[in-house]
Length: 203
Image (tube, rainbow, N blue to C red; front, side, top):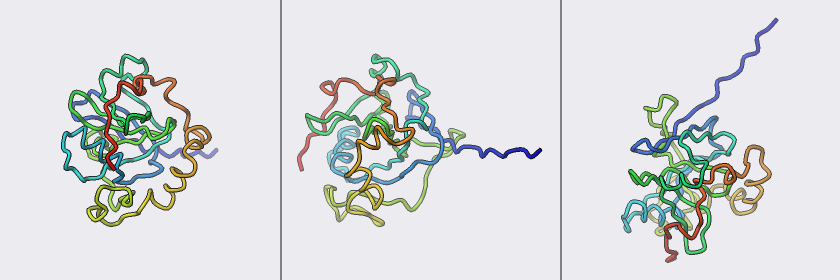
């Protein structure tokens, strides 16, 4: 009788600088990019308190089924550990950072997808930084200064990402296997939008 070989899943650890937030992501992300859009950079400027920052945000995107939050984020009161930034007064989905160390840990672009900041990502040992090379710099067209976006770059979200985010964000949130709405069971990540900090829309 032959023994079936089951491949070991790729595991990466996500944690803020002080360790008060920790999560685990399994399998490879379905897209990894460096985003230079107005919203990402404006939010970053607010979090790091540097209005002159032009650096993009390195993101690795995972379906919800591949993410396990090791820090308790289930109850609404757990949101007190985090700061939440929305883009404009009417923004809803947050960019999230740890209040203790100001580490920007993730974006929640749609409710079924978690976009981790790769500065907070480590290999399975929790020590070695996860640092893939040759990543595409995206949303150059929507950046504060397209001339400062390094190569390789794309005007929008890349050939595949443009379709995903501009045509079918609602499908990602509700139709793709594993992209379930995590807001129901992780209320600490979805506070009342009226309580979030606002990255003002100036563009």
